[in-house]
Figure 1 (cartoon, rainbow, N blue to C red):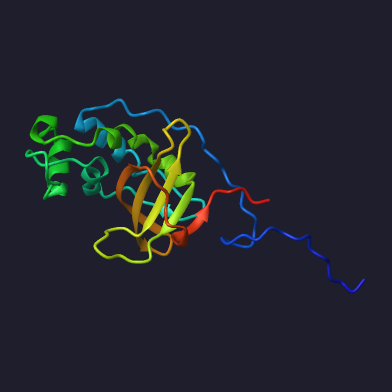
Figure 2: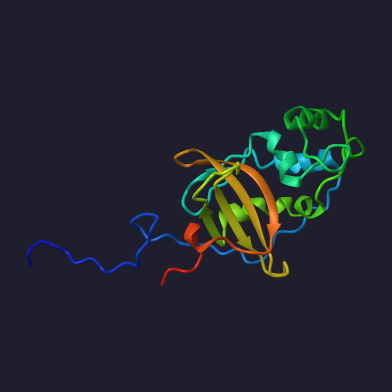
Length: 191
């Protein structure tokens, strides 16, 4: 022998040389039954200390509580416009100074699926990167198709703040998938 060992062929992997194990969370987590804003904020705040990483190893950091109103689409008292000062309003909710009666409502489905966010990041169906940021606050989208959700998907929109660090921008259910040209990760199994 010439001293060289022949390596077995490996499947192509766009995220590194070592083959990654891919996990599939096909069943949706239980829906959130909380309706009080302080309880919903507590659930969202609970994501902060968790180390939530996507299959590429990139971390999504949930420490900015001013994003919470955007996650559930919390409205001003008129019920039509988004909150003008989300950080201040979140602090008042946290202290107990404001409750549901001080606002114009929120998107019930977004609030009910708030507990699905960690599974969407850890086990996405697709991760897509928007090519342009024209009037859009986030450019990386985590799509997740859960069984028994009527064929719909959920989307977590994030903004990149570091090479392997993202922060959430908003969260919502959607009835269509990403543009094919924007997909950077797909959960199809590697054969």
